[in-house]
Length: 279
Image 1 (cartoon, one colour):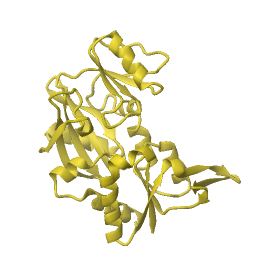
Image 2 (image 1 turned 135 degrees about the vertical axis):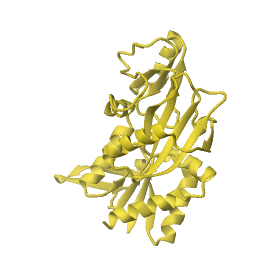
Image 3 (image 1 turned 30 degrees about the vertical axis):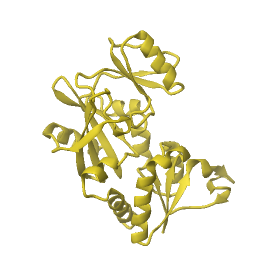
């Protein structure tokens, strides 16, 4: 059995630790895994049938560990009968903050959220607001705007992506990430920052494990009921004394799990995939 781990080429260096753990896990289980970049791939329709090439050669993996935000590619692979983890539906919804918030409107508490395009970028909320690229991840393409000038600068920086705009929560610099593997919660982490409204580790924040609060536990169950997850992070921020849903991270980072727990999440993730492939 041969799988592909798919990344954007520019993301490989900063994810090398996770890649190495995956290579170790597959070797220990006698499974082949190949690192493939999106930039090596060509796909589409040829001879009235879907095709897939790597470096100009037709190839077909048994499964794909998708670590690139390319739901269209995942859909194409699945149309060829190649399982993707996470699947294309999870990637499509989680990879677009507008879709994520729309999916849970009226179901989970969340910040007021405007879906804003580049050609009609009026801010409907009082300042300060948080301006996010609709397809951004890891705290990148996220800006705090305290006035119209900063708002317009954020919009320009995020271009050409569309945006989501939200009022700043009243407890900035703090959030909770819940790691979900399949239908199992594997860890709950508090992320925090003393110097930034973002709490992401990649933006210099800290983290520590916590017991999952009861309200967040209820919200996570609601999210789980609506998706067939492989591995994701479900994030919550705090406003007016309660947790509010923030986003789902598809190709979620795992550094906190290796920092704070004894779990080898790459090996656990591989075991989940192998169990699903043999069902």
